[in-house]
Image (cartoon, rainbow, N blue to C red; front, side):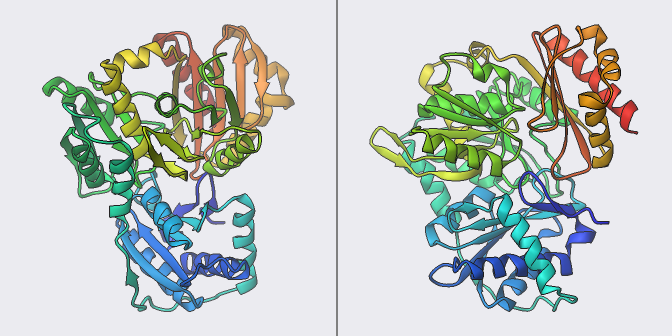
Length: 473
């Protein structure tokens, strides 16, 4: 048994089970697939980036050795946001590998694989595993290969400095919760370049697992304290590899990721949004967006949904997840400036779009959030829950035991409807929802709820976390 698996975005698992032969063999398999498809690019390059985890430099070196041993050219892009690496891959027409575990703890890490056009899909994941089995590697050489280098951050910064125009954030004072995000300095640079005054906060030299979908109480308390101590228009941050944003209003209250995604789509004038079933039900409100495509959780599914929307005639396509990551599925024109598509999760675009929307409207972020009239939606997780236990709970709630399901939600009016697209989303008799699903990247059970008030949502979330814990421990 191993913790390593492909989940919602890339391969992840314990560092102790990734470092060495597993990392080396997965990269060799990726390179074999790329070569089989004649997709290595004009120079045979494979770009390699990493986050700020303690294990990432060594794993990146092992990736470089694997690329070289596969007959391709490793190019070290250093520590940078995942979307910056993806952009560089598109611009250089080269595949890429990002060493990151995103938001999960420092004892875990992972690999994200990119073709020159963007993220690999689920079929590619299967082919990598097939190639790994065919290669049957049994040892890993010492990582000694010398790599070329490429500075990819300048193009990523220019992408946003160019399209947003002169001083769209002029006069705004924005706190930047830096923690151990690989994008912490890039965010400050871009904010300053667009006229805002960035205020660095909470920088850490030790990795902090900030999960934008299940915030730690201490992160929420920090934001409230900073907002109380300073006159800030907003506080922004990201997860570890800077592909998922955090945006808090002037009071230090974090906006949900799906609301940030919706505000980004509104700012960019989207005629189609693509988002998983875990995103807020208010997005389906008539008249909000011309087209709404719902998917399973995970960027490969959102990307497939964006392709579906394009095939059906949409022209400005924004994908986003409940965790806040925004994928730009089409080129966007703004005031004569063009923002090219970037079909991978990105934190910078939603941060800038949300702030620019507030600046443009002259409203505080809290007012903009209130106007959206989203249902109160909360989520959290139970950690160290094996996926087979989560699967057993979902199966029992779904079909195996109707009496058990009815009894579990009797106080909420029973279960009125079920959605099985990803885990199990239950619409309850009183109109609230409860959603249970296994994390795609860690032994965690995710619980999502929606209710009409904050108090009701908090009570429903606590109730369902306790229920799920009792059934899976």
